[in-house]
Length: 278
Image (cartoon, rainbow, N blue to C red):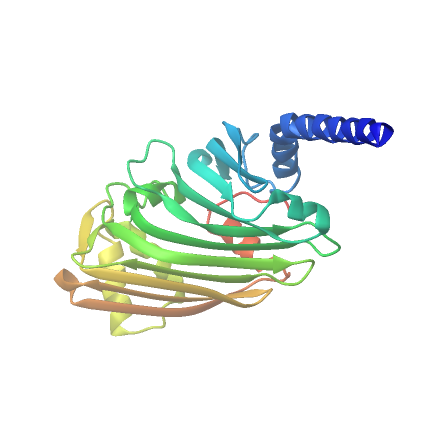
């Protein structure tokens, strides 16, 4: 009995030491994994702040900082927290682990940012799922997408984003954004973006006239955008925007195709959102 007790204590001591070692290495391991799996979307390393254990073999990470690599340069961002919903020991069993996050926003933003959940599974087939909600963003928070065209733009933005991918399968992507009444302001030259996708019509002439105003802020009453990815090489875009001063009720229904199965990253790169290594 005594020998069994000594062996049991030794085993517990070894396991405890291994856990402490793993816990101390967790920030470095997480940062290394992010550095190796971000497709070049990030500029430099991601800094993880405090990492705290939670009951039930769960973990909380606070004070996350990084930078998005875009055509316009690095865009710093912060995230308040990431918390595991499931025990992180699920990773060792090949099971998915769910996480919740909150406060994702450009550095310096006063908005509440983006919140949501994501799922990770490290097994024979890697799996990643993301569901994000935007309830407290403003157009100012999105200015990094096109600093020149969004200069002085304003208005509230809300919506959802869903992204999922398993193994080498094509990803599933859906995004819905809404700028509700009373709307906000946009640069007139911002509407240059839509001209290549509009057929010859009276509406296109109005948009040409509007875009020709250059650096002038235009009031819009309401706008919404829906983006989906029916297959790995094409993206569908449905945009609606109402501008009363120009009697313009613009609806744009477009499909963008690429010559590869990386449509999501290719189109994001084309739009200047991110610089991607493919």
